[in-house]
Image (cartoon, rainbow, N blue to C red; front, side, top):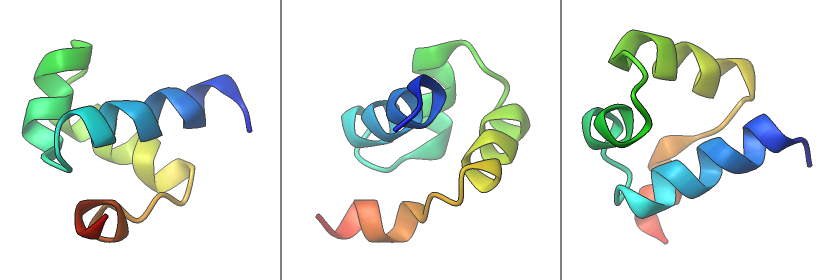
Length: 50
């Protein structure tokens, strides 16, 4: 697993699946973060259920 994908997964997990909170935590703009999540094919809905 590459660094960026692992970073995003940890970020989403630590924010409880809340993308706005994840963006604040990371310093990314919400839109930027959503684009990175899409680029890596991460399903946030699945992560929220865990």
